[in-house]
Amino acid sequence: GVMPIGATLSLAGTQVAEALREQRIKYAPDITVNYNNPGTMTTMIQQGLRAVINAPLLFDEAALGTLNVSSKTPNRFTAQDINFVQQVAALASSSLQRLRLFEQTQAALSETELLYRATRVLSTASDIPALLRAAVDFGQAQGMSQVVLAMENMMDDPQAARFTLYRAARSGNEIRVDPPAPAHEWLAVSDAAFVAVEGQRLLTIADVTNPQSGLSEAAR
Image 1 (tube, rainbow, N blue to C red):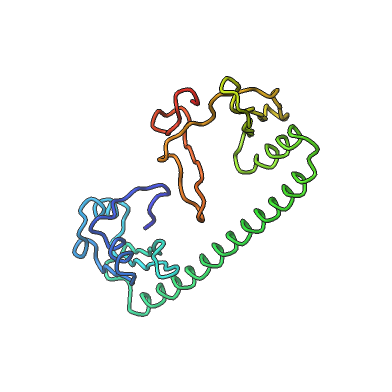
Image 2 (cartoon, one colour):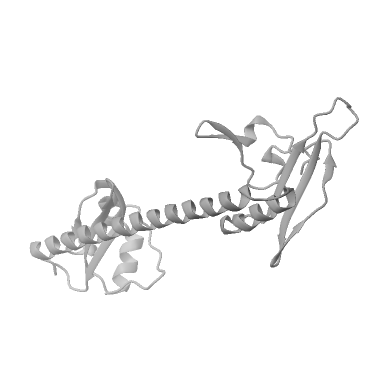
């Protein structure tokens, strides 16, 4: 029997949940006798399933999922079959580990290459607009659509604008750089909006329109 792609089953009280929790293979010779989840059992029986093997896929001492083998015949699987499924699950786990490590390595190499290229371009920027254009261009891969540079004006005049804002944003295939704009306030935020990353306090705001973001009303 085969479960249809996209089928959703509750894991509560099932062998899959037990296999994930105990990190060992589980076998139900006949789900009408050996299954504790009536809803899932009914769905499986409707698909013609009776005997089920669930083998956990382990990665770094954690279960990522299960390899599930089923039959329409009760008591279909032998001890040799169960051992075979366990070996296949172990091989699948090893393949998943290699794939994950490969993806992580590729991601790290891509990020390193991007940072190298960004450093090279940013270090040769002749002025602030060129700097902003380069930042937006390289930030596109990370989902960034605009960059704002806030330069604090070191003046004693309390009436003068505290900041000068330089903004660049992507518009279609072009990058637009706005004229410098004075600002008396820039991202006035509460301490709750900051997070600690590698010993540094970084500001991360998921949605600037959210009143709970920590931004002042003027900054929003």
